[in-house]
Amino acid sequence: MTARLIDGKALAASVRAETATRAAALAATGRQPALAVILVGENAASQVYVRNKVAACEQAGIRSIHETYPAAMREGELLARIHALNADDSVHGILVQLPLPAHIDAQRVIEAISPRKDVDGFHVASAGALLVGRDGFRPCTPLGCMRMLEHIGMRSLRGLHAVVVGRSNIVGKPLALMLLEADATVTIAHSGTPDLAATCRGADVLVAAVGRPRLITGAMVKPGAVVLDVGINRLPDGSLCGDVDFASASQVAGWITPVPGGVGPMTIAMLLANTVQACETA
Ligand code: GUN
Image (cartoon, rainbow, N blue to C red; front, side):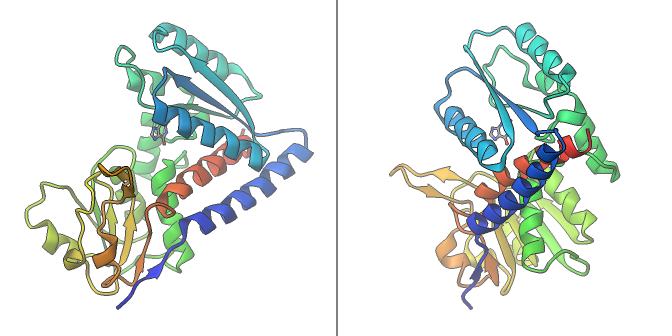
């Protein structure tokens, strides 16, 4: 079998167009959605991510407030800045780019963001809301994964087994809860799971989010399964690859996401959607 491709780039473009329409409707009533993006320090990868987020906002008609601070910024100054943005009614979303410099407690900074403006969905209140099935912002990458499943006609996962390989607080764990909410039977595994291959072969929906290049091979995929690859790994030769060995897995899977051009572009699209939602519900 040769898998069908889930084109994240195309789907993200349509989510972004939809979001732009909603943003324009808000702007027409005098409420332009706005996202504050804060970068501390000079991490090169973070600078690229932040630039991409700011550019995506502009394209969608979302005002962006781009603030950059030196690596030596004190935690107290950053917290004060967040408090000011919390109090500013013209700002609907606040995003602090991670990682932060080591002398700043990232969790304390995230918890300082008002949950009503936590468009990354990283606040403990957002995580708790997801756990108990209440409204709140969902983290963008897992949300993008769910949107991809919907796109291929899998809104309900009743009767299906989903396996998430990876247990991070921002992808694996929240995604497992979202899959559960869609009625899947869910297993969270990780790189230390005994007989990971057999666990993966039981999956109708297999998500790899471990950060290990090409860990998931075709021999670990159930024929016809949906394979979502959240991994983005840089190889020694400078090229990018996912956590899934695309060449072998695509021979077995029914659907598969490429890297790049799969889950990655969905993350920014869902960030924009969360920001517009924050403005709609403000
Ligand atoms: N660093 C890497 N990914 C992310 C993300 O999705 N949000 C934030 N705030 N920082 C990140």
